[in-house]
Image (tube, rainbow, N blue to C red):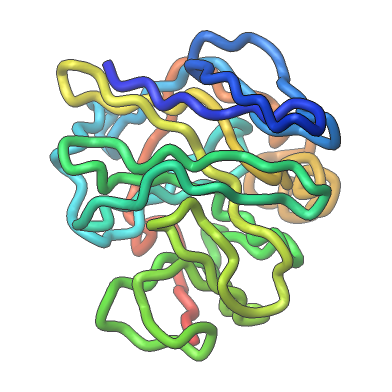
Length: 242
């Protein structure tokens, strides 16, 4: 089973300790902020309820799943090429964290929270202004495609180096969803690394939660055991991209 460690920076000496995320059972903090949050290990299932195989992902296709809460959308993408490794990133509060790289046979599979850190734009069943734009496409948000784009305010983020913010009004990168792939090619979500907007999101969309999940209490429940993964084109009726 693949385990993607990360570095926790401590104090002013910048000493580093490598930790396997799925072994962690509580929040970890750097001196000046939250670094990594572990959650119950959740298996990714396809639309028919079968274990999702990493090899089944179409290259550069947006796939949506909810994690760690019932209402918090994420996107997993096989970029079709290996990501960078050991990329040092920083959140707005000064917390440094390390993107260890993609998972899968080619190190090309990544997952990120689909909540834009600028003003929390995210996919809904009605519409999505947030998505990965495949290489070869065009966007007003950045000089080249192969990026996540929030079309609400044209922020752009590069998945190959950990969801780093590269354009627009957002001031920090995306939250990485830490994945594991087991010996049978099954996929699991185990935690979240980087700036975390889940609680801001859960405090901001009461009317939406009532519409799609019944109420806020249900929307704030943590997912247990498994989560369904569907193509963004099947998740959102309208997909907006500029």
